[in-house]
Amino acid sequence: MTAAVADRPGGGSTLTDRLDAINEFDREPVTDDYLQGPGNFIGFYAGEHVAGTEFVIGPLFVAHGVAAGDLLLGLLLGNLLAVLSWAFICAPIAVRTRLNLYWKLRAIAGPKLLFAYNIVNALMFCFLAGAMIAVAATAVGIPFHIAMPGLSDLYPSTIGWVVTVLVVGSVVTLLAILGFKQIARFSKVAAPWMFLVFVACGVAVLPQLGVHSLGDFWTVANQKIWTGAPLEGRAHFSFWHILFFAWFTNMAMHIGMADLTILRYAKKWQYGFFSAFGMYLGHYVAWIASGILVALAIQHSGEIAPGPIAYLGAGIAGLAAVVIAGWTTANPTIYRAGLAMQTITPNWKRWKVTLAVGAITSVAALFPALMMRLLDFVALYGLILMPMGAVIFADFWLLPRVGLRQDYAGWKDIAFSWPAALSWGLTLAACWVINAVWGLEIFFLGLPGWFIATAIYVVLSGAQQHAPGTATAVRYAGDDA
Amino acid sequence: MRYLLKAGSFVGLALTIVPAFLVFSGTLTWDTHAVLMAVGAVLWFVTAPFWMAKEEAESGVSSHSRSQAS
Image 1 (tube, chains in turn green, blue):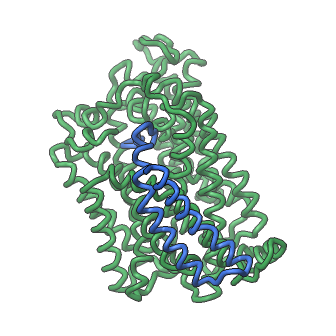
Image 2 (tube, chains in turn blue, yellow):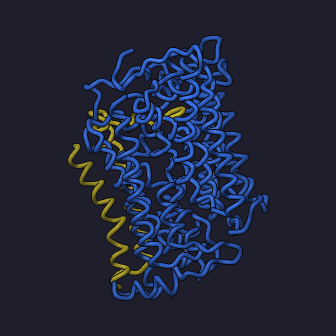
């Protein structure tokens, strides 16, 4: 998405016109001269996954009382499954179609269903950005001695917190309005430094926890950091929680197919394996480092908000890292939400849409629940968007094999694909039933949900395409028809 | 000039990470480590944007960031 496109309001009168106007420069498959080498993907994934959320997720694992062995092994295998999902599910479709998610989903689901998907996506982005603003606020408030929200706080509890969040939210929104591209560039600059701050924080506080040599680490890890005993009010996390959480943290991106947009620039599908740089630097090393920090914080003051724990590890540089991490994550998220929202308000200027999104995001950030329940939110976010990724997978690989046509909505000019819509809705309903009846927690629902969505879409597509009077010619990937 | 900037950046990164290991080995106090990390941060951010911008201009998958529905 270029800035030129981002700055123009969606023109045209119909919903389809408005959606297409925002994405018009991306509608063609990527051509060979725009394909990128491995270095770009390594840099992208490493930068994307060392972010503000890492300051929250690692500590929450400690709060949930995961044992050290479960954490290290769960993260190792869960991140491996995430990498395999990128490499074997998302990347092969990305390099065959060379289309971004918008155009691929438009051909499968139709523009009206895509509109609904965009709105849901935008709301999720607002909440995610809200969590990041809250993360940054925990660092900004320290010099002013603002009381930080506790682990069990769900609502804003002090005026100081409200003012700090609103100030941070206003600044982030203003900067997003003034220059998205500059901040995106700044975010790239910050990424390698931020990763080292995580590592440095974790290493520097080890002596205060009683680790004076590598040989001490395992004992202290079990006795003082990942003790296996949850904090009050938190459910206990097992190996399986960690494995599935690590696998599905970015469910929307891999099996949810959002990274079609990134990987369509890959020369080979094997570039999906470069997601390992993001997983093992951000979702392994950084989560472990922030877990070590919070263990010390629990011993000291009990304040486990990102700002105070980063200060314990690195002083001023730690605070700067929290602010920058929160800010650089919130900024593109507000931008993406703004793009989606622009389809509702086609005549608004770009800055007005960003302002509205920033206001929604800042209000959401007031609620510490968003930050303190981030694990649940991240799992919910991925689960809600995942079924459409399963629909894309089924449409691309399975429909031709059972004699059905791919991209049926695009071929028949259908604005709202009911097989795709029902696959989405029924899958979420089924996940809710599985959760309510069998008590399977939200962290695990993505796996059965993906198979359910795939099966429903194939069956309903068959019903749609074999309905009386429906002419269907099987279309395989790469056909021009 | 670019090499000079890069050298400054790598010194900044070194000041960010090395002191932490010196604290771990007991040869540096935590306070000194915090000061050096702050200096490292400043050094990184006043040098890296200049040479990284030039390298980004030569290529960049990240400029095609995820957008709506993507």
